[in-house]
Image (cartoon, rainbow, N blue to C red):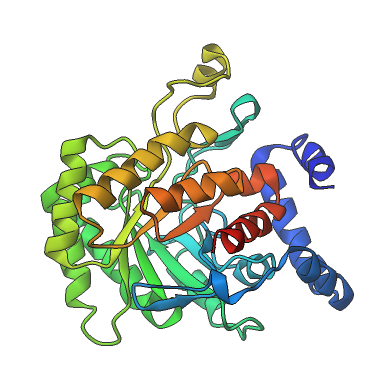
Amino acid sequence: MYKLLRSLLFLQNAEQAHHFTTSSLKRVLKIPILGTLFRSAFVLEDKKLEREVFGLKFKNPIGLAAGFDKNAEYFEEMGELGFGFIEIGTVTPLPQSGNEKPRLFRLKKDEAILNRMGFNNLGVDEAIKNLSKPRKNKNILIGGNIGKNKITPNESAVNDYIICFEKLKPFVDYFVVNVSSPNTPNLRDLQEKEPLKKILFALQERNEIDKKPILLKIAPDLSNEQLLDIIEIVTETKINGVIATNTTISRENLITEKACVEALGAGGISGKPLLEKSNYVISFLHKHSKGQFPIIGVGGIHSADDAIKKLEAGASLVQLYTGFIYEGPSLIKDIKRKLIQKN
């Protein structure tokens, strides 16, 4: 059924299809009988799925990655599809339109997506307005993925992260510091030791009262030496964990013709081509840190077996995005079934 729907959606521009799907889901789930049918079709709950990670209790270990619900508009609806946690954002202090359209492309042969969205969002105040609304599902955990505005120079970036952190703190369960998107000029420079420590220490200073877990989202394109630096930074700043990984700027091993990919231009690639790359990063961090901190594994999960590989590599939780687009909400239930069987 979903494959038929997907074939129709894939006739549309990728960004238009996203907005159509999310707004349609919101309308459909407002109809009581349809909401009940959705839940019975996709939701699977079991005590065996519960996880406690960085002090939070997750009803299941499958989350929706940042980028899907940028303004905290659809987290309740996505929770109805069976996700255990939703990460909203990336949120910036001020609204920004992001990069010029078109900026979201499907690489169908690779079951991948290329995006250069550029942190398009309505700003932290809009996200707070949406998060403040009464919730039907109070069990869904919300992560706040925070970044800097494009116009903010790197030397002042820490202020943007502080603004988002302090404003969002009462409304989210954990934070993710995003310095790894390839679509904001020079943002990845903030992954270097000193600027990154400056941001993380500044947030930790403001995290003494009503502490919230702070995670760092990293790129899949880091060298082993840089990954060792990440372990050192996490240990030194005493943040709670890492999300591995963001999209890749690599164009290696794609099935899509090189000329086609080049014609699409710059951006990060997610989906199947990212699976092994992100798994390597997870495994490296887990092994060399001796499992000192939790890792959320994201990148290339298109099947239950893909999710299991992430967990076996050292992830405590996993997140979906591109695989969810290609495979549909049944993927969430498939992963849950596999995890229950393994337990």
